[in-house]
Length: 74
Image (cartoon, rainbow, N blue to C red; front, top):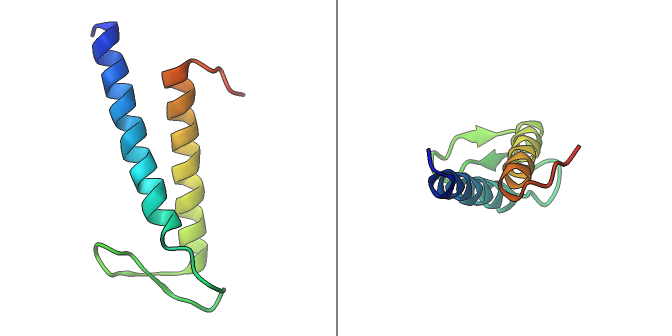
């Protein structure tokens, strides 16, 4: 794979991850008593599940940005 193609693939992954993180952050509840609904499937999500998914999405985005920008984050 050429360097240009590799960069395009990495950028596409970053865009996908930003969209996923934005979707999750858009579901931030007002308080702990709110049961969340996933916007696309309308499945119920508990707050702990939402927090876990949001954390994982942020970590994936961080790794992808590190690779794409060659930051060598710890």
